[in-house]
Length: 380
Image (tube, rainbow, N blue to C red; front, top):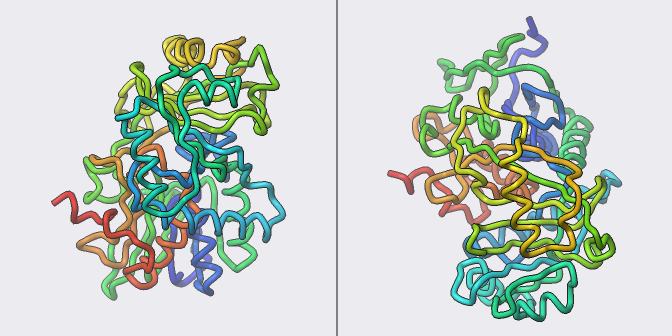
């Protein structure tokens, strides 16, 4: 049994995208931190893998996200500089759909409210400028040049390495069973290998968060997600310099995609892929033909030059809040416990700034970042 330490300033449960960033920010501020991860660092069991993850300044989900994404860009660049790792590629971003659709209209609104430079294009103009696309000509799109993708595995490694360099202790392959409050207002965390005590606790366990906090039951719901990589028949049209990352609202649903990077194939996914709420410890991890067919059909229709042979299929987990906005708060009955949850399939791009925010909440119970809309009290 591990009993290597009397008491930590903070324990972080989950060392994925959010947890690794939180562990780093706490350690960088001089705190004595323990990070606990039940799988490898990084791993492919949760929500923080997949080779590429979209980052974009144009934010159709709500304009209130823009200040946080601006901070995330700065922190990603800082992490890249400190680690020497290639973390972001800027390809530009396209948010497209019918003129009255929230993907286009919301993206345009966020750019205008926050003075973000953008271009408004028709579907025909997108197709002409970026030949890999074949959108309906009457569609409208916001093109924003700073969009691109974060490389998630490198981001997690970078945050973890810097956390360790700042004195953090990180343990992988150690599963947290439960935690309770100590008599002096701290926390005691029990794992399959030991018991640890700290002044503060951060729950950043992704799809497993609701199993560690009753307050998140029904508010952070895991969902099975699938992704596909298809080999383009016109590869040059799907290279990062020629193919912006994209969000697309079409009659078949809301989809997102990427140029080819690192592994063979043009990558895409569908938000709420097959609407499968799951237990993260017991669900169909292996993709099947229905997953592949759903994504191939859309590729053939809107990106036909990318619809070559299947290169790769993968699953991951979304964790959805009821309104699909983040949960960043302390637990009402346990103010020494901060939670980051419910990222609803659009959180990873913010991980660098969310780590900073969760570190604020753990240390001070509040943050200078604009997170009022992410409080647990909105569900009351």
